[in-house]
Image 1 (cartoon, one colour):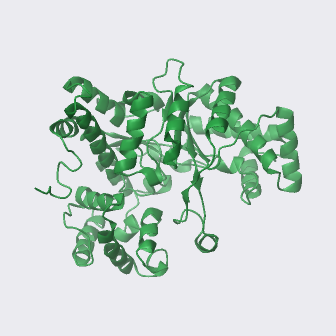
Image 2 (tube, one colour):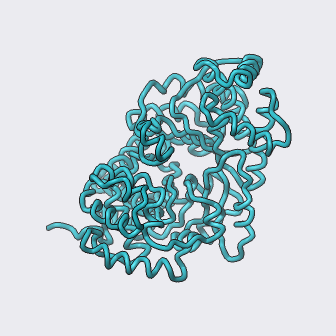
Image 3 (cartoon, one colour):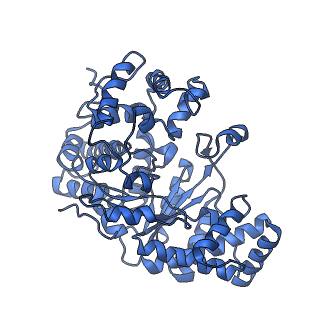
Length: 475
C-alpha cells in the first residue's frame, strides 16, 4: 500500500526511525553555522510582499531547474511580474519529482504556512492568496521566521572589510534571543589574479586605517580584521577552495610575490599558489590561537556560462561540480598549518562526492588535542544536499570516522524559509540509524541512540564551536 506523500512519517521507514525522530530529533533547536542570510534583513526584521520575494529572489537552485524546464529568463531573473514568476515556478514544481526541491517546496508550504495542497499550475492562485495573506500579517518577518524555526545561532557569511554594524545592532534587540554572528570569508584576499583583488585591497586599506604597500602590512590588516570579527562574536572562518593547491614557500618569497602583484597587477599561477598557501597558513594560526573553526569548501566550478555571467553576474545558477587532484595538496596544506602553529578545528566539504573518502580519511590523520571531532568531514553540500547525498556522507563518515561526533546540518542558504532542510536531514539521520537497528547492525538501545541523535542535531555543534551567548539546548 502506497504511503501518503509527506505525512508525519515521511522518510522514516522503520519503527525505530519513527521513535527516534518524533521522540528526539523533531523538537531539537538548530545551530545554523553556515548560511548566506543578510544581517541587515535580520536586523530590520524584513517582511516579504509576496511568496515570490521570499522564495524566488536570489534562489539559484530554483532558477536552474526553471531554465531546465524551459521557462524563459524573464520569468526567472527578468522583468516579469512576481505573480507570473510564481506561476512559472508552480508549473515547474510538478516536473521535479526526484529532486529535493520538490520535497523542500512542500515542506516549507506545510511548516510555515499550513498549506498541504500540492503546488501546481491549478493550485497556484489559491496558494498565492493564502500564503501572501500570512506574509503580509504579523509574525512573518525575517527574525520571526528564525525564532519559529527554533534557531539559537545564525552564522552569516561576511567579507573581512565588512563593518559588522548590523551584527552589533542585532545584539541590542530586546526579546530576540538568537545569536547572529559573523563568519570570516577572505576569498578576495587569496584570489589575487581576479579583477576584484585591487578594489578590494583598497577597501581593506580603508578599514585598516593606512595604505597597504607590503605583504607585512597585508598580513597585519588581515589579522586586525580577524580579531575585529572575534570581538563581534565570530568563531568561524570560511574559504572557497575551488582548486586545492599547495606550494611550499618562505615569508621572503611571499613578500616578493606580493610586491610584484602590486606593481604588475597579476602574478604567475605558481606565484599565486605560493601566495595562497602562505596566507592560508598564516590565517590558520590565528584561527587556532582564537579557538575558531575553519571551513574549507572544495571543488566548485563557478561561472561556467560566460554569456550568462556577463548578463547576470555570479551566484545565478551557472556553477557546477569541479574535479581534480586534491589528496596530496590538501594534506600538504593541512600539514603546513599543523607545523606553523597548530591546525585549528577544521571542517572539510567537497562539492564532488568522489572526494568523500579522501576527505574522511584525511580528517583522521589530523585529529587530536583532546577535541572530539576536531577535523570534521562536513555535511553534504549543495549538489549533494539530497536524500542519497546526505545518507552517503553519513555512511562514509560512519565507516571511516566517528559519526557520533558529527556537527550535523547547515542551511547554506539565502532564504529564511530554508530551515526545513534541517528537518529533512534529521529524518534521514533517524532513518539511517533505524535501518541499522532493524538489520541488527546497531543495538536497539534507546538511550544510546537518542544521545547520538541529540549530538548530531545540536549538542555537538554547541560544544564544537563554543559560540558566545548561545542559548543552551537545555534551557
